[in-house]
Each structure stands twice: as structure tokens, then as C-alpha cells.
Length: 328
Image: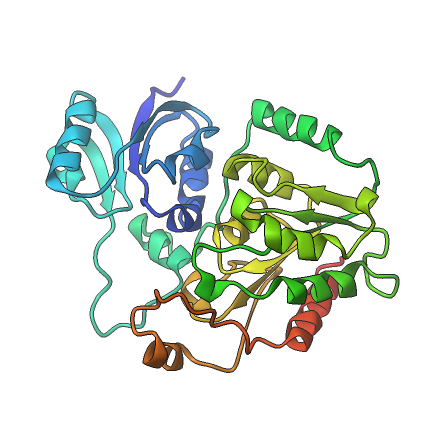
């Protein structure tokens, strides 16, 4: 019987980035089945990994300052680690007893910056076959989601999930446009005429959801926004046939849930770095480049919606094509 192999992994603070690199944990679990895991994240990223198999501990550390690093070092310094994976690039691995370490380094200046999934794969030197995002959900989480679905309407049929929210208004496509995409997919002439509509997000997305929910009869509607946490939402998304959403955590959760078709609608963010990853994934953007957005909003943080020039017809056409391409 193989001896235990303790792995310490320091996850990214930003939950979107933590999901994008999550395939590394799955790869480690598959290739080192006797490994046990201590995971370190922020209060936003750590809960996404609470169902990780062979999880010894889940630690929450905010920030990357010296004080926070010292707190973390104090909590993990007594273990002799088999492997320390540092996805934040904190250099903590150099202070710990370990057999091996894998640490994120700054991307070389002058070299093209690849997708964040590939950047993460470089940490373990598996960039030739980058592992796709993947979040584990255990029996308890699945049961919680099953109980939630029991409270919803009982219609059957494939599920179209829509994520109308984002962490910044600049990246939010208008809900009435999402409604038109949902109508094209779920209407009588669409590829999912008997399908159900699932809306995911936070409580703040309820106004947008109200617009989109009118697309289908009430018995075909599942409203999860503000009712489930992010990992529960990921478990729910595993039941979806297709997902359409903004550049947001919800889109990354759809990828990590292995939804067969995932379409991201992009504007003032770079889909070549953060777009949905893998087969059956597609990104659509408007006519403006990132450079054009930065001329009007240099830090990409103003209270401006930059998504008005993303045409409905373009997204509908992409959604129908993606559905057809993934039908097999």
C-alpha cells in the first residue's frame, strides 16, 4: 500500500482564477491517489473546494502580505509535505519542508500571454495537455441541490442555464437580450422546444432574472439566483445541456461542471485569457477591441456598461451553432 503523500496547494484569491486552475487538483488526485490535500484560499475561493476528495484541511487566508504569509506558515510549517503547489506565487514553498515544489512565476516579458488555463498548467509542467477546470461536488452537495429542485416546478426536459450577472456592470449584457437568446433556443422553433430555463447568479441578479424568466411558462422555470452558493450552483449546472452568460464566475462554474455547451458573451475583458476553456466552448464579443475599451475606461472599472454593441443576432447565431455542434 502506497504511503500517504501530503500536498499543500495555495489557491488564487480571485475565485474565477481558482476555477480556471482547478483542473490541476483533479490531475493530482487522479495521478497520486494516495495524496491528501491541504488547500489554502480566500474566503471567496476556498469554499469552491470544500468537496475535494482526500481533503485534510481547508484554510482561508486573505491577501498576500507578509503578515498573512506568516500566519499561513505558522499553520503549515510542522508538516513534511510531499508537494507544495503555490498558484499565488507567494514564495512560501521555499520556507517549508517538502520533497517537491511547484510555484507560479511571473510570465516572461515579451512572450505572448496564453490562456489562464495554460498559465496554470505551466506550474506543474503539463502545458502540453492542460487540464480543464473541474470542481468536485460530493453526495451532500448533490443532495442539497436535489432537495432544492424538489421545491421547483416539476416539468421535464433539457436545461438551458443563463448567467445574466457579473462582478462589474461594464461586463453585463442586457437581460432583454439574454431573453431573446433563450427564446431562440427554447421557443417552438428552437432546438430545445420542451426545455427548461435555469437562471443562476446572486440576489443582485433578480431584476435581470425577472426579465429573462418571462421567456418560458412558469412550470419550465428554475430560479436559483440567490438561493444556492457557488459550489451548489456548480452541482446544479451539471444537469444543464447548455449555458449562456457574461464573463463571470458563473460561466467558469459551467465549464467546471462540464456542461456540454458553454457560450460566453464578452466585451471589456479578454476571452483569449479568460474565455470558456475546452471543446464545446465558445466566446462571442462585440466589434470593439480591448484597446478601444481602455481609451474610454483606462482601468476598466468605471460605472459604464460596455456591452451595448454586442448584437443579439450574433449571439443567437453562435448559440444555435454551438448547440448543433455539441448535439452528438
